[in-house]
Length: 199
Image (tube, rainbow, N blue to C red; front, top):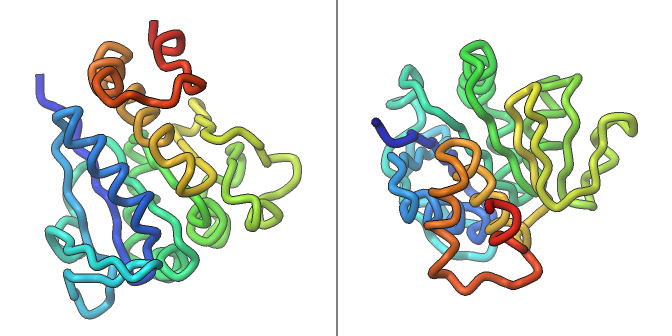
């Protein structure tokens, strides 16, 4: 069976903890991981929100026509703003919806990418508390990670929830045994209760 394919979109100002945590967890799960720069000039080495430099695999335009099981949108105010202003990012998310594939957004991205562009208007979302008011009150969720199965949308709150966010994606794409295989050796915080969640 082919391992799941995941695209992680990067931009100047991306929240590095959210991006790197997700990438690392996907690699541990044996996923096919592509990191793509949404920078307009195609620059691959990007300075993230706290000054850490990340180098993407490819410019986003190079993989625009490829299919992915999940597209991941990290936060960071500047990074999420850049992703939300990218016509290519928005087009790819719309295609992902048409293909009934997963989209995952964390921190400011649910507000500054999805909500700003009218994506998933009927889905329930969580996001960073500083941006929750961007989401209509009747569609807000306060969980650290929330999955709207009807819309194939995963949202999460911020850097401190990045591990849970990434593991949820593994669980949804590859099942509970793979999720447990990934978190087992990691000495996760006991209160995350992965042993019960995926049992």
